[in-house]
Image (cartoon, rainbow, N blue to C red; front, side, top):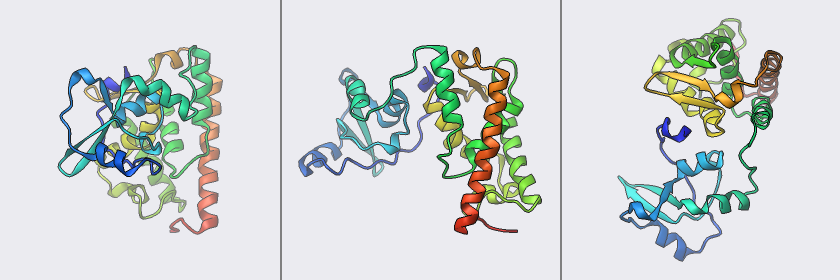
Length: 243
């Protein structure tokens, strides 16, 4: 399972505002968790549902306070009920379904930053015959793209992002950004697997086996279009830092 290869990151979560104050109080108290209760964390729920766990608002079944931080837990047997209540699609059952969902996802223009299309471009430039990319190589290629844009007077990001000054960011900072943001989106969807002990990312085998060259070319073309769209949108809003 993908969740077995990925360490959980810090949770930032808001409870469903529609729940009663009684429920909130009960759920915020510190508890002793028992294995037989079969509870899963918020991040694990996100992987099971294939959604960013911080975008959903649900009533947790339990919570635990650690160092002034609340960690929320959900019963495993609620997963399908939650999936249905949120109107989420079922997990693809065939390789063709996996591929189509990946292609649609990779071409999405739902961008808050430019990281996603840049990561996609870097990934497919580096990927080997087994669908693998070394994370250190991805960091280098990702940085180089932003540095080239900056040198050409066409920066992609503003000062709030470390990629506004890519040559000043450390490899570890860029690696953390990649894993926590663009790569994480593909991990949640089970399109990519991450093996941190090996420092390797891999396209899910059921996807890599059926992905054709012309489809990759189409994804790369879409990535360029997404970047152009992102630049145009932020130029119009006056949000980019010019050099």
